Length: 279
Image (cartoon, rainbow, N blue to C red):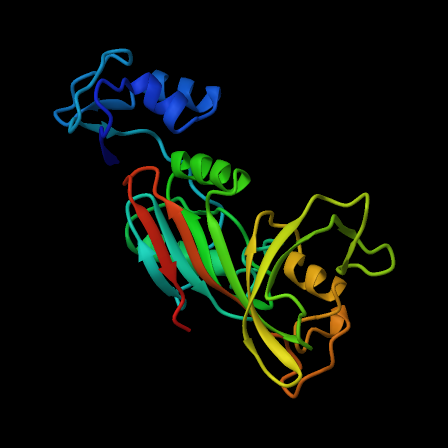
């Protein structure tokens, strides 16, 4: 299904899976049982045999079918793709994934249409974007990629940068907001800063200042629901138009939050990936 080139001398398959990729025990066991890893000629490989730099090994294993119903055509932009992942530009007003069987025009439904066109059956989002947020979404194309990218999100090695215009001017040019976020007991979807909420950290940098607003770039360490919106409102600078969090209403009746960049070290290609959204 895909090839991998050994880049560390005398690395074993066991070390690659357990130490480098840090796959879970269950997944490693499934790969072993499926005899998933062979030479390019299909010959078995001993998992504890040291392999020289430049050795190319082949991974072939059963792929489950993702449950997303594909749209008739993929109507969203794919801005990066390889054998292991793709990055799409999610439009504003579109959900990341379905919430029920009737929800068939989400970002992942469009992604599944693209995957189906390629003859694939698997796609799973690694993180999510709020419906009102546009921009870059990372999607895994097979279960190994999903497992590794999930861990990278947890370990904060996938850097997600957002842009927003906020009310007023922040005093500091840069800073960090570290406040727990929990559900608002008085509102079905709103979130609030809470001492008992989930740990949440947002870094910000002011990149442009205007008379009554400023543009900030934000990097997430965590990915809580409405995190950026809640944190900016908490420090008194809600995103312009975000009425749910205390901002004044705009002519469009909407707020502007844009996931503008994804950056990570690709675990399968062993190179830095930096993708920017041009919209």
